Length: 173
Image (cartoon, rainbow, N blue to C red; front, side, top):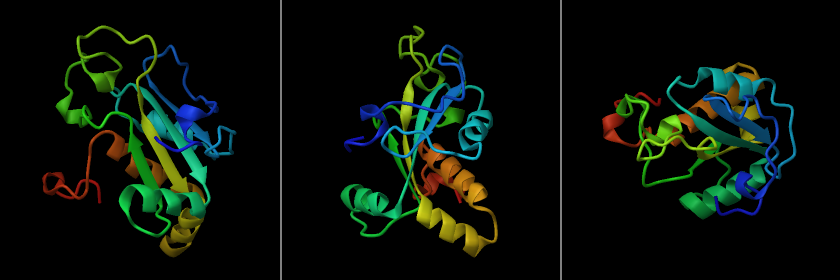
């Protein structure tokens, strides 16, 4: 991500899985590398991820202002959106069903099948706290539930799903 405060330029915190394990590692920060109370969001997303998905995801829980700025910069839409996804590698993102073997990037392996020494960084998710709180009220559920909905939606984008793609057939609704 090209911003000065995203996960690649800041300290990682709230590791929920041992980095030497073969599972998904999820970190949640305030966007500047400082740990935030995530209500179990990181642990939930790590448990929910398909077993064959290996790597790391960074979630920044920020106010509406930086989300609006990022939305304007990257999507040319001048409003605070609920979630933004920034995949690490636009050239080689695969949907889970497209990666049946363990010899693929999404499973933490290089293209030639050699094990990677570190979990592959899948990308950044930016969640707008204000938008999430408003949507939770409108939808009649808790803020924590709304954060889970948004994190899952963004995570699916990191895995290659796209609700704007006709091939999606509504799976990301």
